[in-house]
Length: 76
Image 1 (cartoon, rainbow, N blue to C red):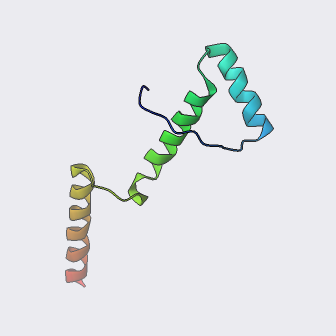
Image 2 (cartoon, rainbow, N blue to C red):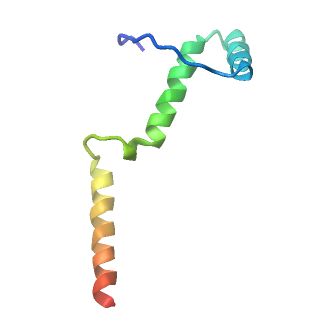
């Protein structure tokens, strides 16, 4: 990841710290890389809650769901 990074402070539990450092000692991957990967996983998981342009896949699913809901309403 060669993009510019911003420094921030996070608070983790002693257990998280111990496990991250153990993982680092075994893999030689910096702890910061694991933390950034964890943040990426959370952002991906909650991407629907974030503002921004929708993907074609998301837009298509929304249109399909709207049509299905309209059809169910019309049948009532």
